[in-house]
Image 1 (cartoon, rainbow, N blue to C red):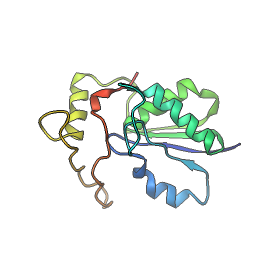
Image 2: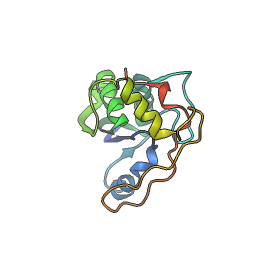
Image 3: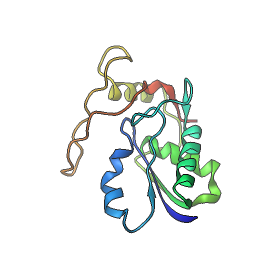
Image 4: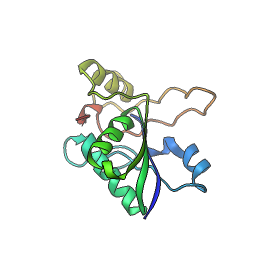
Length: 156
């Protein structure tokens, strides 16, 4: 086994958000960027997916890629997963990058903001809407790839 980089995506995107990093660094270091269950065409693991379950699935993806020691980087919701990864798989963490995230669970207002971001106004079953353009001249993000309502994710 070897060391590498584990990239954990933001909500409501999927692992494709890391494409510039994986293509730019992929020849220099080993990288794995899994999808959180319910994103990127993956299915949920039951009715509710927890950050702990996402962390365990990320650990499995890293193991399948032949990676043992990891610098774990999480953006937004990926930061929640990164913290869970650190708590559950601390012996594998060589470094931890937490970007635009927090250590506590979202309150009700935060959960509602996530639902509003992922879905058009109306019911939770409305189709996902397009995400806003990314900053700094990056190309516009594709349609969010969430396949489940935001309310099905619990940070802890």
